[in-house]
Structures are given as C-alpha cells and as structure tokens.
Length: 257
Image 1: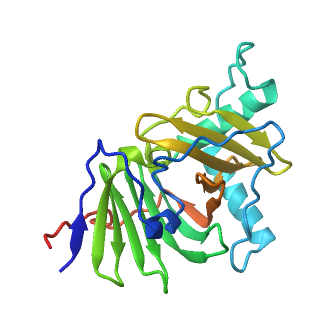
Image 2: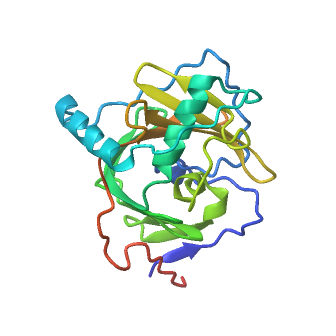
Image 3: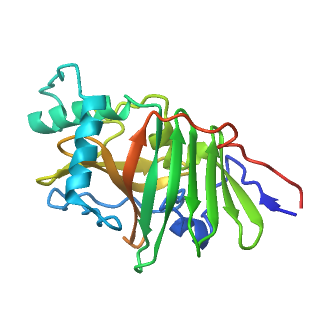
C-alpha cells in the first residue's frame, strides 16, 4: 500500500533530502535569500545527452516561429532594468505566456555532481509531471493544487502545496515576468539571459533562476540555490509545444497507509 504524507499549507518546513535533489524544486523553506551582485554570471546550462547544435538550432527556429513576439515593449524610465533588459523581459514574457502545453526531456544536476534524467509533461495552469528514469524511480506530479512526490522504489508518496513551491512560477495561468515585484534581477550573457526571482515571504524564502535563450526566448534551464549557496539545476531539451496529452496524466492518487 502506498504511504502518503500530507503537509499543512501553513506549515514552515523543509523538504526531505530526496526531493531537494528531485528536480531542484525544493520549497526553499528556511533558505536565506542569496545576494545577486551585478557581476554574477549566468549559470551555463550543461549540454544535453547526444546534444546536436544543428538539431537544437532547428528546434529553436521552430519555437521562435510558434512564439514570435507580436507587440512592442513599453519602456519605463523608472524601471531598475535598462532599456535592453526591458525589451528582453517583454519578449520572454510573451513567449512564456504563449503556450499552454509542453513536453520534452530533462536532465538534472545536483550540487555534488549527482545526475538524473527523464521526461516531463506540462499543462498550464497548474499541472506538470516529471518521470525519472532508473535508477531514481521518482514520479513528481502537480495536479493544480498539490505536488505529489512518488518514490516507486520504497512505494511511498508525499504531498506538498503547489503554492509553496517554485513550480507555481512555471505553471501560472499567466505571469508578468516584466514586473519588478516578481523579477529581482536580470543577468545577461551572449546567448543566454537569466531572470532571478527572490522569495521573501512568511513561509518561503530563497532564490530561483530562470534561464532563457536570447534568440528564441525559450526556457532552457532553472536553478534553485539553497542556504549554503549550492545549486541544483534542471535543463530541458527536445521540447515540443501544443501536443495532445493523455487523460489522467496529472492525476494524484491518495491512499491511506
């Protein structure tokens, strides 16, 4: 029988170590905010297995054709972001809000060099699923209100409120990534641009970095930084947008012990 542990939405807590490595999607509870100095470089995504620059370029062009920004950005003299950053944020925001369904593969890197990979499915608002390949045997499901972490090796399942995880930024119906209330800082490299989101709420504190391609504005990677400054990153690749998905893909089954 599957064991299930519920976590109250008002509790201040830490995730178990297994899930802190799973996806790099820790709840960031009790993690001190990390400074974002102007000189911090963008963390570079690691290459996906069997990475092909030509194939990636073709996929990037296809994504750009689907999500080409259509409106002109509004430039504010009162923004802490410069003109180029405001333009980039506008384009990223349009791309990010242009799709409802996405699927692909992911590869995850832990702070001590741990590596795992699998496939993911996303349907906004609120739903995502990560299926880890062996030997991890984890299944992570968000159904719109909760996140379930299934450990298929030990036949257990833990539940967490979606609203207390960084997943809510990826799964929001719409999100304004041009807002200074959400994005704390922007870091730029030749091919990448990173948006840094710093949590400073009663129950959740920490830092989430979203990394986008500067040409297509597609999401490439996210990084969660813990209290010791250690990074867990998730890079996505072979991404496809708008494909039909199976019924029941995001269903969480809760059983008594």
